[in-house]
Image (cartoon, rainbow, N blue to C red):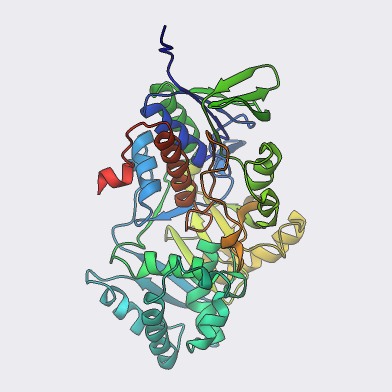
Length: 460
């Protein structure tokens, strides 16, 4: 008698990578179980309650060129809740200007690449005329690079920028302004390959590629509430507060996942957890050099949250120069704050020097800086001040990391890897996480002999 049971899959990890892999496998007809150790889905892009507020653990944005994450939003029914701005427009405030705070803007015109940014760059007040001209020359050189070239991975971005005439000021006021937020590292600590990928894709591919999108609701509504509904509709069994204790091969074409109080058997297992946890769960022989995973470093992100008794910022967000402050976002509406107050989130990437500082010290550092940037804050009462810390927010995009990042496939048939830290070609972003889920599911379905059209290929 033929076995007519549907093929089964277990996805370990309920971040964006795991959710994506589970949806793809279920949509292809597999019986899928998703297990997550936390009480919620969403990985490191989540929300929590603080009194009457719903707080995101950190400010997350995406760009119009993030086609995989945009697919994810569509798939869970959340696209309208995290729209993209109509046209790139980033206010940049320099408080270190000798004549006082000075506002500039990075915005695009409705013109083809590279003319879409020409007017903005020509009038960017935070660089001299010579520095602005040097940016254009460096951008043209950057456009010629192939981010997939392994040689670029061994070079740091700062060295390349220096060779192409970029001053320290230019790096601070432009390249790092974008790079720190997307790579979670300053130019000296960033792989040229990853930096080239970010700037070529975001600024030099299509005119609207860098338009910024962000959630107008708590991230938990997108990555947990709506994701759970989508998974349930696809037939995925979701088990939170459940950790996988071991993964082992039962026989050719069959795997066993041991949970605390249950054993799951499946033809496909996807490990969609951080690199150290993946290393600990990998069966012997699954990777040629499993210890390479432990060589992929991590980088922290700090978020400072301030609730004022009045409105102190008119823009939805801005970036800062000449200040410890990097990016500031208005989270008033999405948090559910009522009344006349305003809730601002200060997003600090590459926060290794500050991630362990006491709250009192961070308060003493950042409140005066916000008053310099926002004059309306100088007489405002602070209703709440708190800090969220993600000590391992992203993988560190250091030179050489490319050779450490594994592909979705392992040497063990039926076992696949997912996570933003795998070899997606992208830095550690929500986009990279979703892409890794696509890759793992696609590799699994291909090995099972199931026809599979990648959602992004279908959209194209």
